[in-house]
Amino acid sequence: MFNKKSSDFLKALLNTSSPSGFEIEACRVFKKYLEGFCDKVNTDVMGNTIGIINEKAQFKVMLAGHYDEIGFQIIHICENGYLYFRQVGGIDKITLPGTEVEILTEKEKVPGIIGKKPIHLVQQNERDKSIEVKDLWIDIGASTKKEAEKLVAVGDSVAVKPNYKELKNNRIISKGLDDKIGAFVAAETIRRLKEEIKLKNIGIYCVGTVQEELGHRGAQTAAFNITPNVGFAIDVGFAIDTPDLNVKHFGSIKLGDGPILARNADNNIVLGKKMRELAKKSKIKYQEDAGHRASGGTDTTIIQLTKTGVATALVSIPNRYMHTPVEMVDLKDVEGAIKLLTATIATLDTKQTFIPV
Image (cartoon, rainbow, N blue to C red; front, side, top):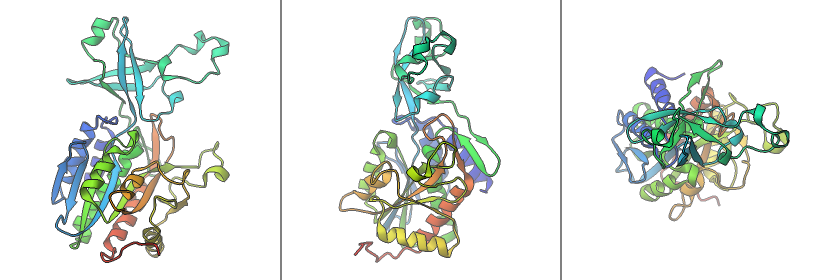
């Protein structure tokens, strides 16, 4: 599906631990890869990494995929050495017990597991209650608070242990596919534009954004700095192809049927029309989605509202089991997104205003 260098980059990125606000590990991997082909690469004070080609071009295109992931942060170490924590970003709490994690300390990564009261010891009237984070803890094998404090500290960030695997039919599973797969798409798109298309009159700014799970904070500062004419956010979208989901309520999105093009207030009508026409002309499979909300949920909204406004489009990779310790995507959808974005940017008219009327 991808060449070895690209595949190695994807694996390395997915195997980083980068909870929102603590994205250093992902930042380093992303930056190193972009330095192999971009004209210029820098990291801003927030932790966003920006790879640039054709910096002097007046017409600017921004590609954004966030490389932060949902995670946890230690808030208390009890007397018998257990660690209590809060969540960072939205998370499916029912999936947490038994999850292997790693605590990101200043010196090293400390392994642990999220524990709870055994089901055998839970009273019958408690079994149907929803799981709360306050009732869970992280066990690192310590027997006392003093022993635990030699390894970890209050405030340390916690991530799910890397668990990348390849399955059949070009499908992969990993924690943090939301949205390291989007950051991968952004990086591969700018690489192909640099090495294969060789654009001259369009400046491309590939941004690995931070703190998306906490309110799109990285995209806000990056877009303000770049001031793009056109902005593409690449994120994940809900795959509605598991037995318990009703397509009448959520639409019909499947793994392997192509990237998702959204139609809601976050997406510029003119740009969206161009992308759909190009996809049909180039025979690139894509899926339509009205979105589960009229606006919001991704970096697209923040980029769109930068300064006097930006023509934006959201391209999403169908994702199963979103915001759990193991997510799943199909690499055919990833390749389709890269092809569509590359074709769209390569054919942009730099004189077009994208005003819808």
